[in-house]
Each structure stands twice: as C-alpha cells, then as structure tokens.
Length: 493
Image (cartoon, rainbow, N blue to C red; front, side, top):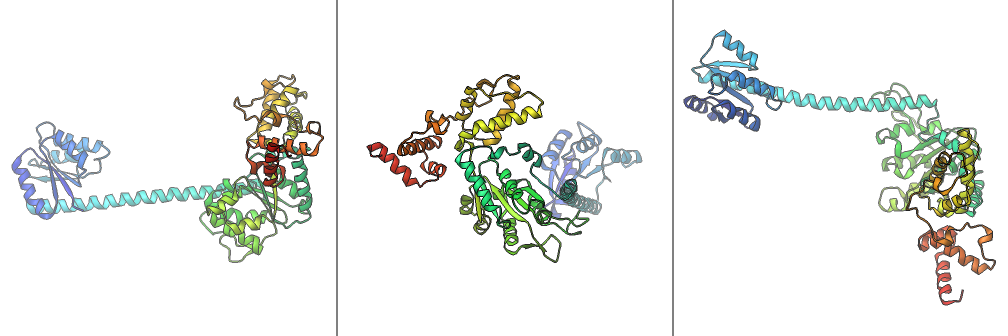
C-alpha cells in the first residue's frame, strides 16, 4: 500500500523540493497552498502523514493543526511542522497545537526522509494496534456476554432448586383442569388416549396441535397419571433456549468445561431423572441437538459437556409441537429418525373450533376461576353471549377464550355477560349458520344418513370446504365425504 503524504505550503519552490525528495522514494504526494484547501483535502483523502508550513495566507499552521485534531476523521493523522522559525516558543506552540515533530528550513534531504519514514512507521504501528485493540474489545465483549448468559443459566438452575422449567408452571396450575373440560367426542378420545398410555411409563409421546390447545396440560396429565408422578416434571420450551447454551442446559456440564463453568451442573435430563422431560416446540430444536437427542433416546445415556464418562438417562420424554414436522422433514429441518422415535405414541389436541360444544362449559369454568381470583360474585353468560362465543373461530383456541372471558368479567360490571362485553374481533371468523348451532343431540336428525350428512356439512363449513381437514375432524376417510357429497347432489344419499 502506497503512503499518501499531504504537503501544505504556499511557496511553490518548497512544494517542488518536497516532491523531488519524496516521490522517488515511492510516496504519493497531495498538495495544498492554503488552510481551507488543506482541511478539505485532508478530510477527503485521509493521508498517512501531513507536512504543514506554519505561515499560510489565510490561517496559521497552528490553527490548521488544531482543526485537524478536533475533527474525528483526521485526529489520528500525524502532523509535522515545516518552518524557518526554530525558536523554542514556536516549537512549543507547534506541540501544543497537536504536532508530533518540527523540521526547520532550509529542508535537508536526509533529515526529511528519516523523519518521514519514522513517523510513517509509528503511525502504521499505532493504526495496527488500534485495530487489534478493537478486535480484542469485541472479543472481550463477546466473552463477557457469554459469561453473563451462562451465569444467568446458572442462576436459573439455582432459583429453581433443581427443577428448572422454561415454561410457566404457575400458568398451567392456574388453568387447573380447564384443558379437559368438555363432553365432546374429541375430548373423550383424548382422555381415552391418556388412559391407554399411562401404564407405559417409558414410551415417548408426541403431542401435536395448534397453539393454545393445551399441549402442556396433556403432557402434565400423562406425567401425573403415570408411575413417575412423584418424580420431577421438567418443562422446556425449545424455542426459548439460547442455541449456544442448548447442549449445556440439556446434558449439563462439568467444572472448567468452558469459561464461567465454576462447578458441575446438571442438565434437563438429569433434573428429570425418574420423571418426565417435556420438550415443547420440539420442531424448533437445531439439527445438531436433534442428533444428540436421538442418541439419548436410543442409548439411554448422554455425555455432559466437559465429561469423559456418560451418564444414564432415566427420564421419559414427552414432546409437543404446533409445527408440521412432516413438512420440516421434507425441507431438511427435522430428522426423520428422531420424528419416528418421538412419535411412538401420538396425541392430537384439537382446536377449539372442532369442539364448539365445549365452549360454554369452558367459558363457565373460566368465569368461576376468575371470579374466585378477583374475589367477585360469579356471573352468568347470556344466551346471546354463548351463541357469539360458539360462532367465533378462536384462532388462539382455549388460551384466547380464557383471555376473552377474563376481560368480559371486568367489562360486565357484575351483571350478566352480554355479547358487547366480549372482546371478539369485528371480523371474527364465523362459520355458516348450520355450523354455529350447538352440536348437541337435539340438533341432529334422527335418521342416521341425514345425521351423517348434517355432520359432514358442518365439518365442511368449519373447514371452509377443505375435505381433507373435514375428514380429519370427523375421523373418516375423505372418499366417504366425497361419496356423501356426490350422493346428495344426485339424490341417492
């Protein structure tokens, strides 16, 4: 890289002399004959060195130097004064202005070249040191951040006294049994599934369903109904764990394994020993950790960070996701072998729009719960409010219903809750008139074929005409729906 030197002098012979001295040495010269031009060139070119005459037509060299040093972009450029005045007062004034050296005229070749080389070398070294200092500062900041995150994780372990949960256990307790309130076929099917799996305390379970459908409640029910109920239930939201801490948090670490690891720490698998490890949002787990999780599930052992010996795992894994894992597998974002290992037994938590008949029961449950918490007298839902709740699609599912009921209890002022007290969006997704009717036995036709047709039409209304979704809702093959549709059109059904 060629060094640029800015020469500031209003006497042309002096400029020619310096050009004859410096250019043969490989330096690139920039010139300025007054202060205004000098400041402009210096700011634009940022030369490696400035040779500045003290006597200029518009400003003194001292003032030019002070302005250069007051500007952040040019403050680090070394300035060497050139002048015929060599008295002590002039030299002191030059240093006070920010100069680093003083060359008296007439200029001598060897002196000029020696001082230019020296100051360029010093400037280059200073620049390199500043760059290295910046790199070290960034590295130190990253290290401090890493230590802080690990200390935060350590504190979380301490605060939980060995039962770390990144999900809100208090919220789950607050819901009580609300996730299982209802008499719909879907809820009966879920309860039957839980009864089937409770005696298989080592079988992994995968819970699927939309957000707000109570997947953690199902996981806690699986744990509490099993032989592991007296041991820890450790819930982890995989999407909330910092990626660089995942391995340490899941498998623990040994003292000295990394900066800030001042003692041994148990990971989630050890904390859940003999109990249940609930992995919520398992679809968000990085691929590298997926491979390690698969190995734990297959071998029953894991290696803490910094350890030289494996630790046996005795935790049952229950996972949950609201993502389409099969699509993630196709996209290469989730391991197929891990999916099959987790899905030894599956439970699907249905969205609230598939169990509208349970909405009044859930709403009443939440009303009683919030009235008790707020120390208010219980209130009731008007028939119109119930119809409004059942007609709404609840994209946020049970969690959204709970929030709507809590606000309604505040808005109603102790009176019966009316539709205007329900904070439902103005453009609420309302099903067709048939789907909005409560699906109790009184609503079904007595003729079996007509009843089936009624349910199929209702499911199609709820699914906006999506046959595949309607078939899943009803638990029947898609062809059966197609046959009913075509049969109804030609009158043969």
